[in-house]
Picture 1 (cartoon, rainbow, N blue to C red):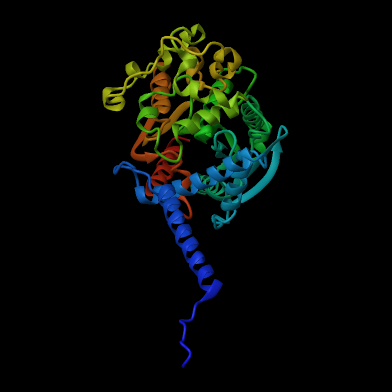
Picture 2: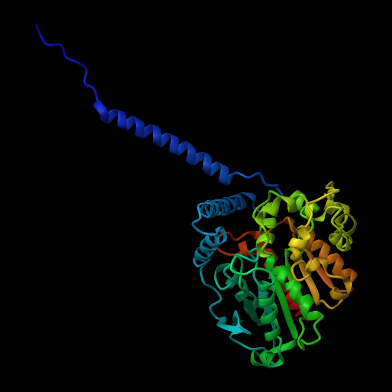
Length: 428
């Protein structure tokens, strides 16, 4: 009888291949879901280039989540990891404005970089801008990438000296060190002999900053304005979407834009707590405005200064309502006194202090949680008799000025940079 032929079986190899295919399918689905989670973010159609911002936001969220994991595992402070990534990325930005001379030096022990145009003005004197970078008082590479290009652009187009201050940052230092570094460097530069060294007209010096740098610029401008011991003064201040207060995390713009990248409402509260050296567990109390509830008497002197329902027009505040709990978390303002310190929160300064502030250019974006901080400061400076130019971008978002350069080239960022530099050219 002929032997029956049995069908050939693949043995273990086919099973392993099948398992690998299944794993590959699972990995592909998970990767696709992860990419969709990171990439997809519903954004207002009025926002400048929303699809491009969606990609930028996904990159930020990915880095932030990796940093949070690293910190939870005890490997590294999340801010240090984010700063490493930021620095690495900024180092890839192509160089430009190579005709601008740069000098790394120290002003009163504070690291600075001085940018100078290669040619002087006809009479030998020129204007100057002191610049403080943003980044939540904890992030940023002021001598690299977009900030380096921004300072070179100012030096080139204004034919001015630009000083960028590389102030120390959290978590290595806390408030008021960042403020004091910026104040010390500014006072040093404003000395007559130093201005003469750089051929700067003492009557033509401005201070400028974005986000947390705008906070520092406003605070330093206030301090120098009322400091009789400082001979030199700033003629102008340029505040680019500045953060100016931490008593109300439920302004109309905080409510409207709490999920709009790249600065989310909760993230801003975390930056404040990091800056002030406070317990990060307080973040939820801050978001609920428990620290400024009606039973918190320390907040009483400042309520009118932050009453955005009275200060701002209805077309700005829209349908949003203030959030002021009847009772709150006792002791937060005592434990975190920086929340009430005008050096940290310049919007809280009284009118007398504001009267000595220099003329201002304040930029705000409609899709920014800090919009109302800037708009309220416009009104308070005007009430103090200070000349203010308010420039609002209906398609603007937080950080757009930093994204005016390679590789994103956001149109609203490019326009915002051109506008404030043009204002400085006309007024400095």
